[in-house]
Amino acid sequence: MHSTAAPPSSYLNSLLRKSNTPLLPLQCALRSDPVNFPNGIGSSRSDWQSSCAILSSKILSLDQAGASAVNGHSSAPSSGGSDLLGLVPNKSDAAGGGNAETGIVPAQPKPLTIADLSPAPLHGSRLRVAYQGVPGAYSEAAAAKAFPNCEAIPCDQFEVAFQSVELWIADRAVLPVENSLGGSIHRNYDLMLRHRLHVVGEVQLPVHHCLLALPGTRPEYLTRVISHPQALAQCEHTLTKLAPQAAREAVDDTAGAAEYIATNNLWDTGAIASSRAAELYGLEVLADGIQDDSSNMTRFVMLAREPVIPRIDRPFKTSIVFAHDNGTSALFKVLSAFAFRNISLTKIESRPHRNKPIRVVDGADTGTAKHFEYLFYVDFEASMAEVRAQNALADVQEFTSFLRVLGSYPMDMTPWSPCCSSSPPSSSSCCSNPQDRHN
Image (cartoon, rainbow, N blue to C red; front, side, top):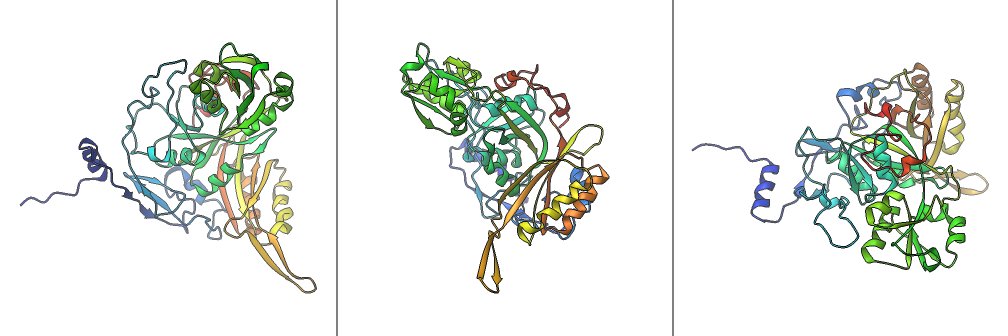
């Protein structure tokens, strides 16, 4: 009798696909080492972080879920080790936009959902970059600027974009973190802390809004205008002049609004989106550049499974997140560590401390006082390869109970150009960023 080894799960799944048998969920195997490697990375290029003074045994991990092993690759599901991942086969028509449809709307790639997370594709293909939205979204243009000639992978949620990189479906993710008018995208800040990806670059994209509708429609005939809430707010004054009678209605994203109008043949509805969305979905640009502020810009971060090696031969930026036990009273001491070394802060953002949202203080005269606890996200202009940055974070550690380096990466130094907000993914002219191609 010959003994045979148990076939791998990927082989079993392939047999189940051929036999049209429903796929069984695969239980993730857990691996956790929160002491030596709190960021979930224990080898290769990320070891430079563990050697810094800031990453010592004092650092506590907010996420104790560890990393999951799926098909031989590491990942970190946000909901812990009890997750069941139903593995499904790759859709052969994903790159070509699915089945061809009749009408004015060309077929576009279907956004990834959680059900689409599948085994890792073969090596040697183009760089795959995940973004949230549908083709024609500003995030797609940001992915094209960050990684020219990449294979852009649309995702229906920010969470799916994170997981697609962790599960090796995509090589990078490009996600927005702040807008010059609308402020921070808090959801992505929370997800960066929950997941174990590294910031490896940034992209600043000018936002160029257009009023779109079906061909032949006039602005005075519109009864409503749909778009992302921030896009509606950024075009409020101009839109009132163009179509004062139109009601405003918020949807998930700008390009999705254009797709919805074209798919449902809505002659009385307009959308605020990019000119590229008009080309993709057969719409007409009724008004170009309708944003109230011409300097409207969105900042995106590029995420990867491993960090880039910090350097000192080009401008670098470092992003960190920390918390401290003494509430906001110790914030001045933390920030002074950067001021004493002439390190410029480009951003500071506070978010609720989900693991410890309230701190109770007993008062002698007034009873019990309750204070909110916060996590602080800070971006500063320095590379982790610089001694002053390492010393600054060593001082920060003295006043913090939790500290994590999200990434040290090259700054986006490309000139401001409005064309970058509407260029196709294959464009590599004004939107290409040579300093990011090494990431």
